[in-house]
Image (cartoon, rainbow, N blue to C red; front, side, top):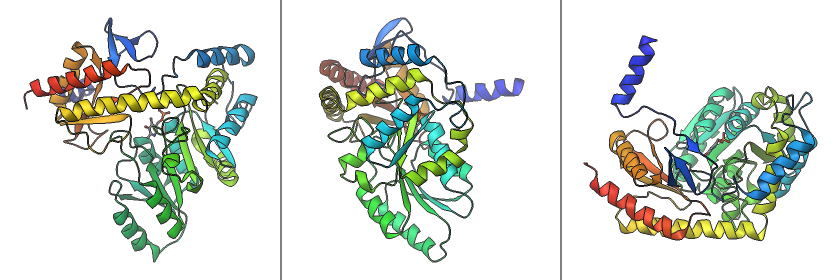
Length: 391
Ligand SMILES: *Cc1c(COP(=O)(O)O)cnc(C)c1O
């Protein structure tokens, strides 16, 4: 125990200690932190659905009709009508033969990659893919080739280099929207490569689903290649405001995962209240209200980004509601986050291993129900606080 304490102390001295911040009351564009109302700029509740009355009502209704817990894993007695309805809805949303719901995005990525790839197979993975993809690659036991972030020439070289000794299944996996950078995977190029080299393409659209594309189908809709992605992974805990995740794919892929995916097989299934709320979330995403929320989010993003750029800040390649403000080292990053919270703006400093060493950042995320004027004021405040910091 003494040793753990020393390790924690060392983390604190390096500005690397992670601690929890509690939000009092419900999630919304403004939340209560340390007894004060602050502007929430670090939630993935992009469309503001987590507190939406229609989702709350659907969740309560499903709970009162079907109970609180599902009581078992999916393959035992934990597959309820609502699981089936939600999976049909997701398959329809993505235009695939089938879909499978997982208990979280983390469980989905580890379970999909472990279920579809094994020793003898090869996974090509973007260098900035989410930690759950990295862990899924490890769990699979497949050989993993990491290609430089979004570098399609480098990926093609690696595919070519492996082609002569090819055996087993090939899988290319990428975030659709990169979670710490807000940039997009070059999906048309990835599709061309996966077709040329006969690999499966898996896109993790945790941050694109519900948000990107005219109808919110995600990054693939934005690029017009929805029907050319083999494995559409998405989450229900971000723009959809609920909890859980899914894979939409061909029927044989779904059936394979039902038979092999350990995170799917060995875990109690999602409860009725979550499933009911998720179905209501798809209704909203597909409605005129959903389109209006996407437009409001994009308007807020533009206002925020313009304010930060005017202040001379480096926002990398972000083109989405995830806006990284690169600050470099851990201590100044965390100090900036502390000062911003003092001024009523809640965002998180992001440090290694979540991002590469030397690339600490304030990661801001916009929401549809932020007011444009408060977003503009927050951008000004961020510019001011960063200018005050000792470099
Ligand atoms: C958040 C996230 C996940 C994990 O999803 P959870 O439902 O939160 O477990 C997976 N992939 C990406 C890219 C994410 O941002």
